Image 1 (cartoon, each protein chain N blue to C red):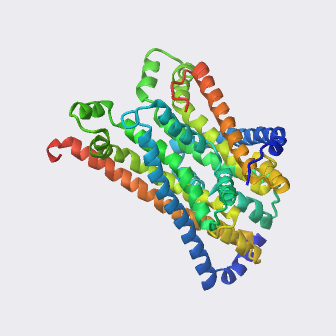
Image 2 (cartoon, chains in turn red, green):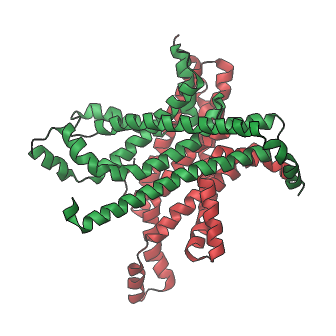
Image 3 (cartoon, each protein chain N blue to C red):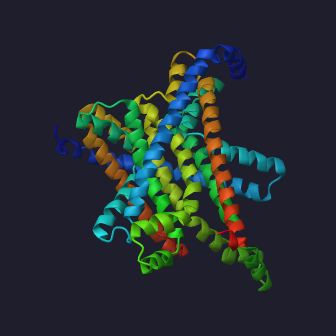
Length: 222
Length: 239
């Protein structure tokens, strides 16, 4: 048995397109999940008792069941209610709902880390409400949240690989297709693994540099 | 809501004794693969994290190999890692069962997560403890086991249950190579003609019960450890 990468390298451009698709899927689901998380975290902070219980149930249900089975459920069980989803829609909705649960938890922790003393100090100094949010609350929360948020984006980028099971043409799906055509299995999947490693290292570096320059987040890059 | 009525009509046919035995065995397979894989992964992770300590392994080049390992494995999706292990076994000519392949994949993934977790535990112990041990002429490995680890394990233990829960969830991907665990069982029942609603709904609840109990166990352990540590801090004479 010999490893032959020559035949497999031809798939590289195709795979890189797949990697871009993975990044985009993760980005869309992340952005929508961030909104759900914001609503969830604010509900946990200021909502009524019933609303809090509902948000907690949502978070613990999605955090305690596999994302794959959630998407299976959306994809195969919703048609029984007359809701047909395309693979891309099922994956996006599943990942968004899943991300929403995790990002609710992350953002709740970020809100809790805000010291009341800083808000009081801003009030004492005569800041208006907008100024307090702009100069005190927002920088604090962004600094506290940025590392875990960017970390979760990386996790979600890796999570997009399960979209392959539903036939979404991202990196892993392209690898599975190429495998079915060429049978150079180990070469294809090791190359795929390397692309994922490179992709997420680049994404981490960009996120780290961005956080460092724009928000002055001082966290470890890796 | 025609689907609900259909569900009600289907339930007696679905929740039969043998179907439940089938699902129970699948749940045990899920548990067994993830727990065994996590255990092996934690042993590997312990070795990796320890080999990253400058006090234990002085040459930087050797240490960077282990750093590279953790960084690389953490950045490969579990599905791709699983395929690599699957075809890697095929390439090596070793004819292994799906169980061995699944456990290997879980263990490899866990080794990286565990190494990160254990490293965080090591870093929670102040560096001066190492220096004090060196000053007292205690060999590094002995210092690790008798000074650092007794303090570090409280930081290590709570996240380890979270990792176990996340691995229980990730093993759902093992259904892709045909290993009979919960997700695969649900797909089989689905193909035998039961509706997707009842199949996937049931295993979602099963997964929830399993993960939630592990997570609660972790929270309980964390609370116990924190209150123990506080109690000890209040009365130093007990130590």
